[in-house]
Image (cartoon, rainbow, N blue to C red; front, side, top):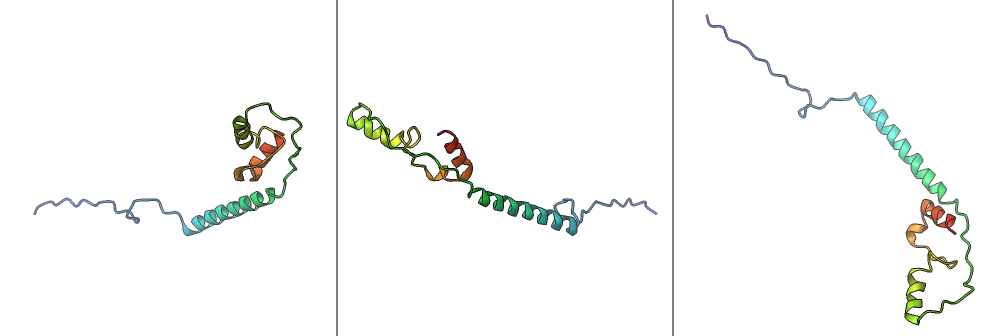
Length: 104
């Protein structure tokens, strides 16, 4: 009689070999993640209502520069560096709005 060695190989239940969490734990963590996302979205929406005013005042003095330079300054610089605020779309969102408001 010949001795034949039987070699057993490990076959994971999941073809990728990943650890399977019980469905209950997986569902609870997904529900908790969904709840946290909804709370975050709600808080972000509510914060949009907290908008202190930004002071707007007309200019009191004119710059003595050539017209070409003045038009460039008015177009590119006055929106941030004067009392004549023209906020960009990204400055309208509340965290950025608060930063712009505090620099006034």
